[in-house]
Image (tube, rainbow, N blue to C red):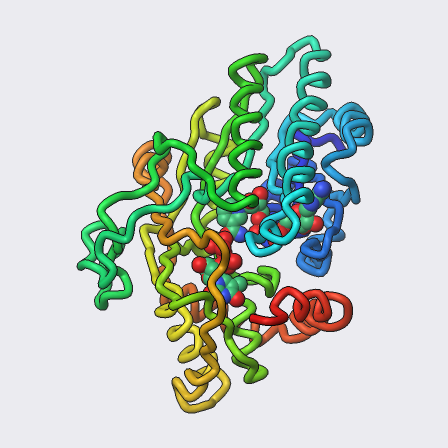
Length: 380
Ligand code: NAD
Ligand code: TYD
């Protein structure tokens, strides 16, 4: 079959990547979608069971640092688009092992850029019709002030809803123009990769786009991240390790809202632009944790809130960023994107998914991973 385009999605076996692959495979049968993933601890092909037999889908197990293999793939498949999500993505792991983050996130991204450059520049049409779309994080901007630790009424929220949970906790946001100021080895490595991507546009004219998104939540997230970890622990009545006082603020977006934005920006975004993606949805960790406990309890038929005593304050994360909050109005105004779900709906949907997919969770939490996980938190 002849395809209209061939797009490589890196990191497609991970959390966000699997949603992007699913969306593109289903929505664009005229595109060939190649999921390129090394299958690290975070990559799981079970995330894509429903689409693995589609004629427009191919999985390639590859390390993004393998320049020769990727250059060959570009040539063999006539790749004209790259959506790059493969990364080491967990801040706590980056604190323990920064080298792996520099290798994959910085050198891996550079390797993809260089291979794409050599291949695209070898074609008669050059960069025409090509795209290198790099998925990054709001964490590159550093941390915002907590000017209003108690929260203020929500002038910034897209859909005002009752309760202090939706209040903003500061006076400022991260804008596309905010100066980079990463603090963790993870965010430093992502910042560095963002700079390389922009440098390839500015130096060689490669048609690149970078987006910086806030914290995602939803199905298929690896259970080392706050929300799936806590849902699983509540189910099994295991302690919930809250770092420090739990006062840190994150801006949460349902993963399918992120993937809709990625689709829109890949097709309609302006080359060399940056777009911030976020839901205007700031929450303190401790407030999210309470909602998750109530939701899990309710859906399991327990008394709502009976598992609050699982909350266990542990030693804070080193260099823990106080607050993230994204201003996504550029994306909303220029491309007409907006988040589709209220947070309460998104959390309900997410908790329900994890409770209904216990087998998916058990496969991950059994065996080697469990041992690693325990060693990560030993002494906390
Ligand atoms: P994830 O950890 O769930 O998945 C990462 C995927 O990349 C895995 O499938 C893994 O096997 C693959 N991978 C890792 N190293 C690789 C390598 N060397 N070669 C090939 N594949 C490799 O991550 P995620 O949460 O889905 O994040 C995806 C991207 O989105 C990352 O670039 C991350 O920085 C960015 N991002 C994530 C969030 C979030 O809240 N999760 C928010 C904003 C941006
Ligand atoms: P996480 O899901 O790791 O995302 P990120 O660090 O990229 O924001 O963590 C979200 C917030 O939850 C962050 O402030 C750290 C905190 N946290 C805990 O309190 N306990 C935990 O066990 C984890 C994983 C995170």
